[in-house]
Length: 456
Image (cartoon, rainbow, N blue to C red; front, side, top):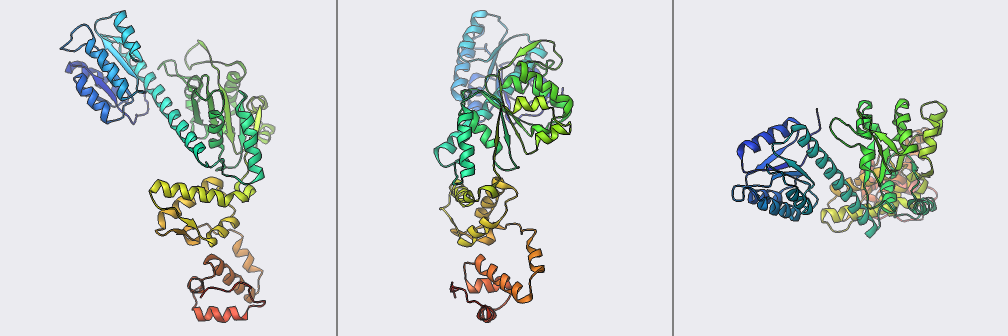
């Protein structure tokens, strides 16, 4: 069976070279990356200096042939070095007491020698998959806590539109109801979903994410409901007692929507290839930028599924609809990026702030964040000016000039150049491609005279 490669390798510990060779060949045939250790000491050194996704260790070594003492000590040591890494123990001396003691010390599972290949691989794959899910959730919890310690992207708001959203989600988070988050791309739907989960009674259980827009149709059953042949749990099982974040839910094909509906209605599923019914307790948080009611009228989305997903609906406003938040958000991203790079805090020039306020932000918060990050990288000084932002020109700008006379067009270009460069005549003249004296002459012809005196 083809499976994706893992970033972190699997530690194989045994004092017999032939055993290590056989195990490593079996793991490599499944696309896994094993690394070997011949002794508990060597295994501890490897675990101390690199990340591992699982350890498969023998309990009996040459210095301690049958008691399993060295192996049990290694279990305890690995748990100290990598508390979240699963440890699978194996021994040729099948002893219930030894297995119980290994599990008591933190082992995730137990295999007897000689092992059965399918069972060993199923155990390893299950442990590796669960480990990756736990690590992802640990990272998400850390990100959420970090955002709460300071002004996070969600909480940075002065607009009434976003304050209403945050007040609603504060009430929504306390319930177990399914939530549908609506909004344009880049408005922060996934961030809000994670915040809802972390504020909910399910916060101590997993938040499992799946992007329907990138999920091949052929993988829907296996990824969502699990795969019996590989003893591989699906996203619903992994999210048991927690939350399942389904991104771009509108892209689920109609013929697969019925399978999703059954789990939402009955809390039951069968893994692909199995007739055994499994019960799951999952809160579903869905996101989409599509009009699901219109899709339902066009028979592209089941209305009964929409009702199940739509127990509570929250719409995130586009950034242009919360214009009061543009500059506070930009300053937040600017400070965060400077801290990340170890630089002194920079500031936004007045011309940059004016440009940000007038820009439509079609990519919403995500675009604003990327613009600020790029501006910090390319700016060496302590001020971010309009040129560093490199905002895309508005499509309607050329059309404005089409309706102006030549003097009016010239006056508009001069005004915009002065605004971009904070009324600095030399910089504005350079941007217009004329001399400073020429700009002086043109300013002298403008009526009425500007109340603000340009800087020389």
